[in-house]
Every structure is written in structure tokens, then in C-alpha cells.
Amino acid sequence: MIDTTQFITAQTERVLAFAAHPDDLDFGAAGTIAALTAAGVEVQYCIMTDGDAGGFDERDPQETARLRHQEQTVAASKVGVSTVHFLGERDGYLEPTHEVIRKVVRLIRQVRPSIVMAMHPERNWDRIQRSHPDHLACGEAVTRAIYPAVENPFAYPELVAEEGLDAYKVPWLWLYGAPRERENGFVDITQFFGQKMEALRAHFTQHPDVASMERFVERQCRTNAERGGLPAAALAESFHLVAVNADDTISGF
Image 1: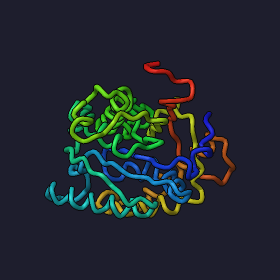
Image 2: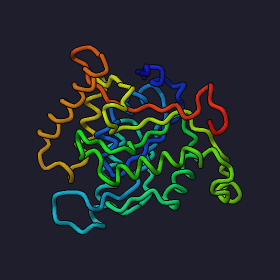
Image 3: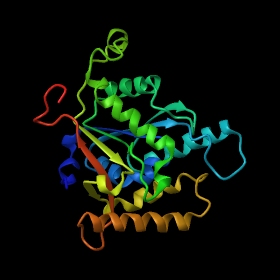
């Protein structure tokens, strides 16, 4: 188990958080993000698809995309995030292609974060809804981008030649929506759970039964806290933390 409290400090500086769809981050990590921003950390979001295939009303996909961009921007503001990047990929069609990976590499080199968050690339058989194909593609694209492309100056060399975006070594990768056996870090979000719920409520096109959604999320966060060994009344989010460039990391190993 990794002690996550060491990261909830202004020394973390910047976090770049990726998601496949609008609302994914709010389910998986918004409480942690609220804790980070409260500690003085700059957090930026990158939403990889427009979410144009989501919702429960008959609506033009372009209008759905517009609404979901708006919802995510409002949700982000509830947890202290003011910068939201949208890659504009089509909902349900996300793949870890080199075109997508290049966009991810470009953004990571621009932001140069201490922590990158992304959805887990492994399928979760305990709750398969966590493993929407776009979720897996998000995790795979970001993981491939982080190693080796972001830190390899010969990967997408035009990013250096044309935009001056030099190679960068990401210290940490935090994956959410992980299979339970992979989870090795739990963040106490008890103080920030209200902000997490405000963020989730902002996605009004996605929740036909808000009360059921809220009960489900609270139950999940209580279970996370129990598994993380936190106090009985605590609420937590869970992650698979990966040290990409640790003190003992050498080139390529």
C-alpha cells in the first residue's frame, strides 16, 4: 500500500487528469482532485471523447456534445479545476491510435505534470461497466504515451522541431477504475465528498435517478475506505499508483 497523503500537498505542483467521457473523472477521482486543489495543486482535465453517445433523451449528437462539454466545465469548477481540454474524439470509437497518442504526448509535454491520472487499461470483471471500451482505450493511450513516447525525444519529433515541446519524464501515473487486485492507494475524501457530489450532479443529462446515483457513489466510497484501512466513518477513492520515474529508475528500466 502506498501512502497517498504525501501527494496531497502543493509540492505536487501540477496534475493532468484524463478521462474517456465527461463525468468519468467525477465518478472516479473528483474527491481526490478537490483535495489536491484545496492544497494548492494546479489540476487540469483532458476529456478524450465528446460524450455524444451518452444520455437518456432523444437528442442530436452535436447538441449532446455541446451540453456535455458545458456539464463537464461546470463540474470541474466544483472541485477547483478551471482548465478542461477536449480532444474531440467520437464517443464509442476511441482507440489508442498513434494520432490519439500523439495528442496525449503533446498535452503532457505542454503541462509537464507531477502526476498523470487516467482510467485503468485492464478490464474490471467485478463491475464490467467500469470497463467501457473507451475507458480501456483512454488508459491504454495514456499509458503508451507516458512510456516511452513522452520522455523519448525521437517519438513524434515534430513536437520538438515545430512546437518546442521537449521530452519530459512523468514521475507518477495514477489509474482509477482499476481491478481491485491492482489498487494500492486510497485517498480519504471525507472532507471533499460534498464537492464530488456537486460535480456529479452537474451532469444532468446522465442521471435519470439522482438519488440512486448518490447512494451508489457513497456506498462505493465507504467500501473503498474500509479496504484502505481508514476510520469507520471515512469515504475514499481508490487508485492503482505507478511510479514511472522513481529515484531508482534508469533509462529504459
